Length: 102
Image (cartoon, rainbow, N blue to C red):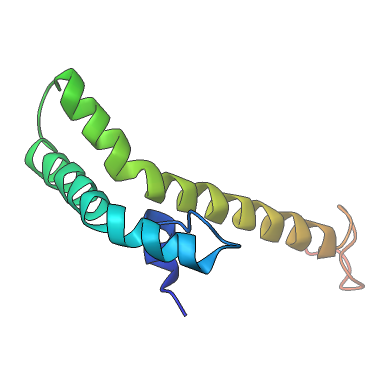
């Protein structure tokens, strides 16, 4: 089983074709790894920069892309949890039989 964090950075290109996926990994794997490593190195090197060059901006976007997708997913889950909890709470003004709290 693939590590989910690796799957976000290196998604399956051919989910229905094992041979095509294997060929793709052999052909592109090193290039993809180098690309992601360069993006992360640029992010680290320019984290405190006051401005970025265009290429650095692209590297930042490449570095943050997989994390942004994970963040959106976690935000969606958080919203669903909050909605579920809000629905489970008693209606406003209903003290659950405890009487006046004052």
